[in-house]
Length: 247
Image (tube, rainbow, N blue to C red; front, side, top):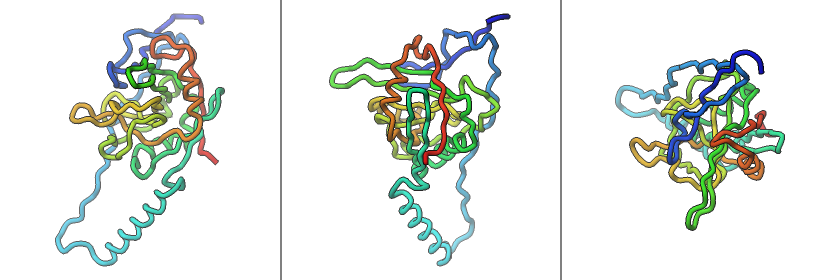
């Protein structure tokens, strides 16, 4: 590496359970100081309310009923409401089933990154390894995304969908969005190893993280990557991946 060596601050998990702070330690990133991620105001998810009294018409009620039936049928299996994504690495493929019914905004954000090829240059780069406790096996996370990738591929932040709202839980194999603050998640996601209810919504100030899917194939690949050599919470060598819709 030639020229001036500059360092880059890498994210680390906040004490206890979070994905919030920035590491005190730094690492050389190709000898170049990285660009700052663009700051974009969070999107809003507002449901319009119809004014006036008298209630909906028969036609409106019928349309709502048909829509509800359609959603129920779609939720029954892995169709459009349960699309699957293959995350391919040199160690194998991780297949993720995305829950577009219970976490529609978060799922749509992740699927857009996949379908538009925005995860080109993405990698897994971060791990957390918690030792076993009494009556509980070891737990941890594997995190990946575009932190070391091309920041021009980033989309605006996605509205925050807590587990209180979606009913999803951070159990073994759950896929969830990493974030610093509510409503600023973009491309970074993590896979949960072992049940970790402390990542769920627990009350004001402990809103947790936005789960949106789960690994249905390839947890052995997740564990293999999560077990690679690391310095603290950062993998010594990042593991590149490409994501595409499963066939």
